[in-house]
Image 1: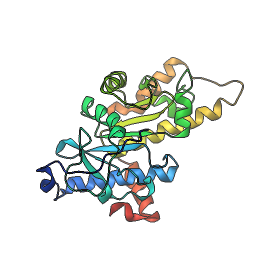
Image 2: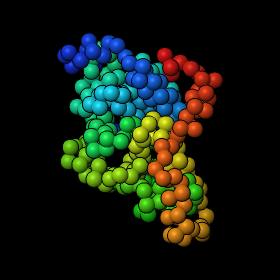
Image 3: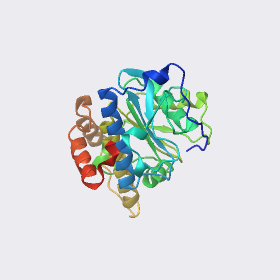
Image 4: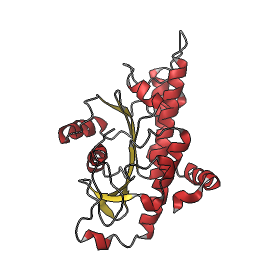
Length: 261
């Protein structure tokens, strides 16, 4: 979370270039707006804070992010702001962006070319498990998706510096997800759908853990079983979300299709 605010401004010649949105960018905008709406629908949002960012197709140095001040349940595809890696607005936009909030995302995008979408949330269950000394335990099949594949980053305060960015991305490595201690959850995806489905799985795992640990004793699978299950769920590195995403979009369309606008 960060409270720094930067007024929207165009970056010179890029303003005219951004006037025309490609079909690929349009699809990315719709998917990203849908991810914001789905987060709100699931109760994963935190007022106007936290972000989901996505790389603009064909423009690896440009990203889409939510306008600062908008709640997740009101974001539309056309509201998303195009920015560069420094958080500067590209083209014309009436909306401000949270520059320091994007700093974490910028670090991950720069370090991980495969991180087309970076999702960072302050979901209650995720924050709670991030504060537990043992982190995420293999208490469920959902949790075993991340067995040996979940990174951790210790809390360093509100200000996110380039030095912390280097430490965070070093910890993240090639993992698909991270628990930011005392802070929240982070997932990266090769598509918006993948980042969303990974986040849904991680949050479900955290919710199950909080429920299970109310018992006096719990049953844990063996290391061998947890390792094998993790490999099975990784499915050879297949991109997750391809099957789930169309159904999630249909769900949104039934509720409120304005995210597509």
